[in-house]
Image (tube, rainbow, N blue to C red; front, top):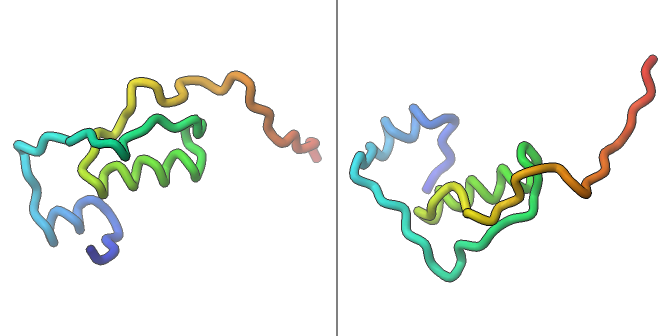
Length: 74
């Protein structure tokens, strides 16, 4: 599959399937990556590529236990 710039380009190139049903398999596992992180985006991208459901019922749903960088105000 060649790289598409956006979903509209992908639809034009490959079409779409309104009857698509995602399939779960042994590779469909939850992720602890926080929402919006590069890791979570990669997991979601891979799920779409593999025809899996986008969301796993036990994916991380909050930011508890995470620490972030604190940047001083200028």
